Length: 127
Image 1 (cartoon, rainbow, N blue to C red):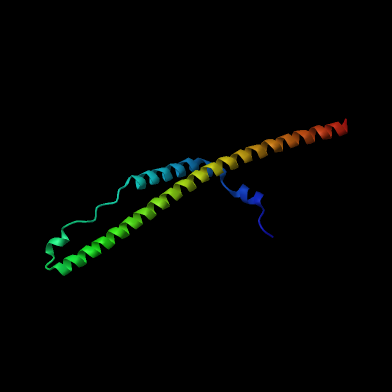
Image 2: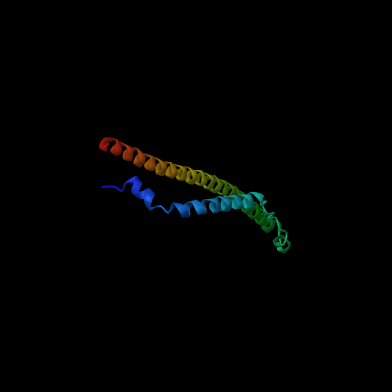
């Protein structure tokens, strides 16, 4: 038989999760701001071009440089997308943890209310 949700939820160290949720969100925000703040570096250095002996090798180098610049640009775009996704997931995680904690508090309150009502019912039956 499968593990019940109650068992799984009781096994989670909620105090640790709640304590670390803001750190996760802050880390994701810092990652996003550092990645978003970076600009693509100019990869068109002239150092290697000075040693080219003929027009053919210079053209080949230029094609290679253009290809590398396109690759770097593509990777930078993927990095931005990944960082945005991580930031959104961290925010969702924070909201989820807050909601779970709210539900846990409500469940505890409802349990105490149920105990009080059951006590009053038993007292009413006995009286």
